[in-house]
Every structure is written in C-alpha cells, then in structure tokens.
Image (cartoon, rainbow, N blue to C red; front, side):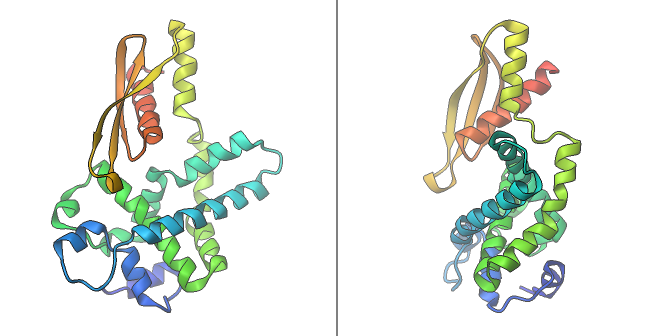
Length: 228
C-alpha cells in the first residue's frame, strides 16, 4: 500500500503507518485474506465517529451562537451523514487505497457509499490516535466544514421525515407511519428495509444501516414519488 500520494492530500505523514493501513482495511478484505497481521477498521470507525461529532458540534456551536439545539442538530446531521462523508472520502482519494474483498470492490451502489463514509470516520480515528485531537480537528475543518455552504444553499439540513409528515397531514389529513419490512445481514453489518405508509397505502421504501436511517431514506423517496 503506497500511502505517499494519500498523505500529500491529507497534508501530513503518519508517525505510525499501521494506523492508516488499518483505517483503509475493510472487514471483507481480511475475510478473503486470512493470516494478514493487521486488523480491519471498525474500531477506528467507532473512535473516529466520536471525534467527528465533537469537532462538528463545536464548530456549529461557535458559528451559530443564536441557533437553537434543534437547528444545530439538523445542520450537524447534514454534515456527517453517509452521503456527505462518502463524497469527501472520494474527493480525498480514499477509494484508491481501500482494501476490499473482490465482491465489495465490484459494488458501486449504496453499500459502497456506507463503506466510504465509514472509511472517513476510520481515518479520522487514525489521525486522532497518531497526531492528537487538534490535528484531527484541523483535518475535519479543512475537508468537511467548507461543505456547510452547500448544505445551506441546497437546504440539505431539512429533515425529510418532518417534511413528509407535514405534507401528508396537509394533503391527506393522515399521519404517516413506518414499518420495518426486512432486516438483512449479521448483527455487526445489518441493513434495514423500512416501508412508509399513509393509511394503508405503501408510499415508498428506504434502506439504511439503522432503522432511523432507513426511515429517513423512505421519507426522501416518498417526497420524490409524491412530488412534494
């Protein structure tokens, strides 16, 4: 794994190269390559998620001193959702260095998006362990905070579930409901499929790594289908 190009994009070199190698190793790769001495990136993802949340929360808290908690939460969600993090990962070239199984490497759909988003969090975790919080925070500031203008311009902070509920009540007088239709995969990598109903009518379905994420996806699909 040649990391010189990647480190140039990141703006620094890792003291402990095994950390960034681990951050770029998906579980599926080790399942296909038994005997490799390094580990997969899920523990770093867990750590990086916490570092990312603190960094983004402090940034928004300082930038918008008069916004209430609810609005700040919506902005944070728009900055750290899987679509945004996957986009930033691609811009940084993580995909060129990511170690995946042959099957995962062929997948270019939603599953790849989640992998790329999780990789971003793993890299943040690796930076934190290698360089400390200040460097990790600066990295997030450089690559993610500029996306705030895009979030505000395109109103990406709007909560799809709230928007759909508001329109459904306005147009039909009914409150939408969500029902889990299927759970796919093992506990450590489960995907939920959720149905969005207005009355007895199934309006749309959504997928996600959590029920909340699947419900949000279903609401987005419902808004598109209804033209709302």
